[in-house]
Image (cartoon, rainbow, N blue to C red):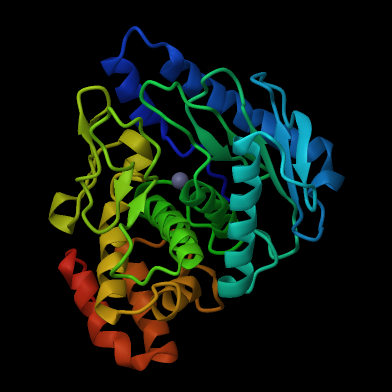
Length: 340
Ligand SMILES: [Zn+2]
């Protein structure tokens, strides 16, 4: 299985924020802690296999109470009444929304399609600036209250849990273009969880990934913008959104595992513009093609690049929804991926 080790905020982004805010050591601490936690999470999975065995997709929300213990104290499990802490209730609700999306739209019983429990720990550490999936559970920090407002957001949960879905299906390798596709599929999953919950058709949603993440003083709408990659934020405290919107601007450096969070802007824009061209709900016809391409019987191989992924979407489009072939080819051409 291909494991994703980054949190929602990826290491290169956190390094950039740390560089720009030398008096705020939280960012470097977050990077180190994310790495430590990832290792710990895997150990935990090996030590307590029963905890992660087939279940009924039940929710289990824990509270770390600002410590770094996982999973922490039991806070709200499936069927429990709401508690007084809104963060705990939000995590419980958002885990439920992702579960519903997986079941209704992807016909999956939880992330592994085997009913694995949807575990999450909130209030992790002190002002911890990240949220992540470690193959076993979600973990959420509170943010520093200076740059980051919160990490318990519906599309953040949807994004991270879709890394789990990819782990259990195509297993797209987490570097270079296949890694950017892995990130892309998680952005699609995250944004569609929100659109589905709010019943927003493709032309009514913002297509932002993580609105509500930044404090109001920060000049940023979200961490990414699927429709207009490269425009989500621009602020001296966090830098400028580095995403390209076209193959001519493809990032080819070594950073960020070969640009997995950078180049995902290219397929993101292809999907968002395709969904808008099709009209109606993106989680219906457009996503059926994407889901088949990443998770179905006729899915991409784990080392697919943008071209191979685009070709596979066309194949699946011809099989599932022939009328949409021209719109799909047009959306890929719009970002510089030409497929016949
Ligand atoms: Zn991700």
